[in-house]
Length: 209
Image 1 (spheres, rainbow, N blue to C red):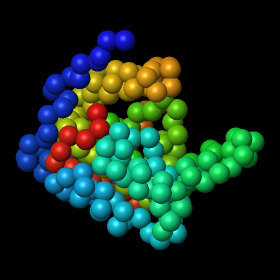
Image 2: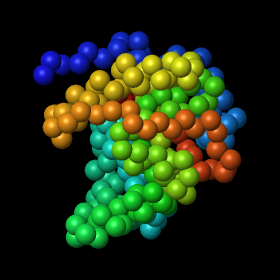
Image 3: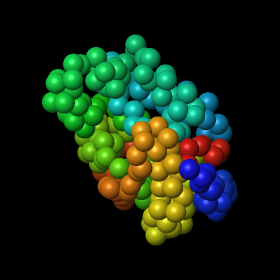
Image 4: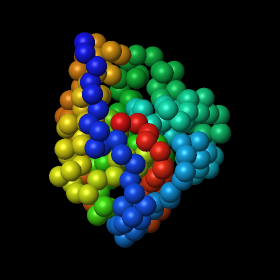
């Protein structure tokens, strides 16, 4: 299978001006935004934000994998990793409990595909497993986002997902699972009415796709 060439325009780190506009818009829409320099800083800050004893669901994310946060969450003893709890269940129990455990964790940790300068957040998924907790189910959300994912508009964000993210994710899933990916479900978060529910850590590095 030939390698997929990333779309170069969607790999550029945002300028300081674009980053400032985006942070201001996110805050105005009820999404708390913090800017950090590196993925290592984002990982440490994310871990600080997770309360002791919390049930934590980490969505599948190249960003989390790249900065080592996925491994930290799965191996944690200070809080309860939902994925590890699922793995401990027998197959029948997993079938009946998986959706409930993933849909309503105390904390969702993950990333997104695009963030607009108007403060809108776009999350695409083949299965939708991270969309239910993101939209409503999780008591708290921590999103870690490389600033190459910042775009001007929703339309540009959708183009980023279709032209850049999907081909790369499709290539990954074919290699790992033997089947392609798809944009089966899409969540656009225009704002959050619960203060403090969503924290976005914007990283001045290209992370994920």
